[in-house]
Image (cartoon, rainbow over all chains, first blue to last red):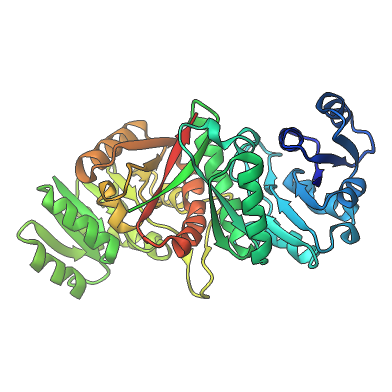
Length: 215
Length: 215
């Protein structure tokens, strides 16, 4: 499968490598045509690893993953171009975190979310918010934790969510994918990120996730 | 021990009953001196169950639990009186949820929290935010879930948090109490409540909590 990954940070590189291992062809997209981190990654990851602009990656992918920083996501997606995203599933892993002051805060929350902003800006794209509740190393390898934990999907398109849930299982080995509801439920998973941040500060392992336990 | 519980809703009644079972003397406080739900509860719960105003309950308790609705908490605590809360531990279980429109939203979040507002308003009280991440039935009986899950404490006073962690274990049977840090980390657990709300909508059991899983 051709997969476009927007971003060249840790999340993009980790997910890109995992998808290559699964036999997919992956193009990382960035603001620059040949971002050094993407060039180095492609050299290392083999012939199925490509790089280019946001536009190139979006045009290349049958499915697109947004792995840019939340603050840059809307701009990156505009550069990718609505025509290259139209009709496609966009897996949005980003969090709208402002780290500028040292104290984490969200740039959008409570009555709106980045996931909703993206869905509004690209109404013909099937946005599925997921994976933003875990670090890159957990996203791509959830079985490394001591127990299987949960990951969540939010989106307006039920078929797109079912497809993404299947991909999360096939690509990364997730077992429990909880459908929270429409894209407004992205507020929940994005607002959780502040809690995640405090948990990370007191979790020795740094690699962790939550499991929902019922009665 | 004499315990003052502010509030007469489900959380207050459930916690109050559990504390009575543990051999404590409990006074529920409300806006009215004899709120019908508190009167009925006291009649049912036996001779160690008392009721009165917010002021009565705060004066009575060696330790105070805020089990009012988040929107009413600051006002209830003002009625309780700073002099009756001075030097005491205040366990704050409330969430600042505005349910007026049908879509849940928080009245304070991201750069502040109800826990911080209470600590600022009552600087001589030792505020510990906890239990707000679970429903009343889980708060008072975490062992009813299929596995032991986690509960969190946030507060500026380390001794107060250690005392509360001990009480959570003794009173209710919690085993894992995670200290998130100072009272600003109340932002994390309060913002989680929107996520909790969406999870509850898709969790058949209605009784649930999260467990932090590491590697």
